[in-house]
Length: 145
Image (cartoon, rainbow, N blue to C red; front, side, top):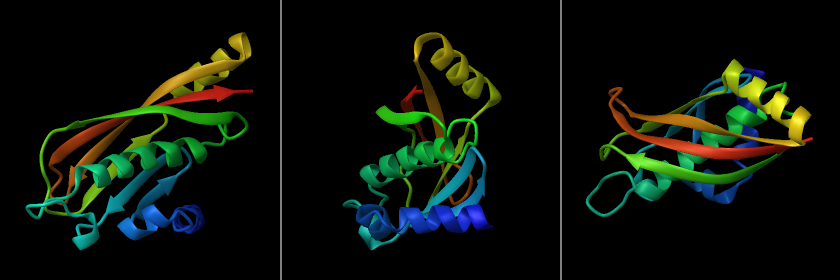
């Protein structure tokens, strides 16, 4: 619960994220589920969730998952690129599910040790209120010692 509250306090300091109303559904070290509410401020024309809001949600989830992993916190991190594949429109809340795997952590630690830097891609699944897959975001993050 403390981690969840800490994450929510930090994301509320970013005006754009605060406007969107993003909240934390679940939070563990290196794993997060964020919720983007379907509300007027996050809608596009036609009454569907704005694609930019979905992109923001996914990018944020990747950053939070990395930032909360205890073995990755010691590295300087830079989110280098993010891409999204939209699979469906949504007229409901959308959740973003991100998780740092043991393989990702190993790749970072070994890469930084060998080369002074490492890069991983973090996939984030976007789901609507009925569990329907509405998109996938992939953020590329670089780590340095």
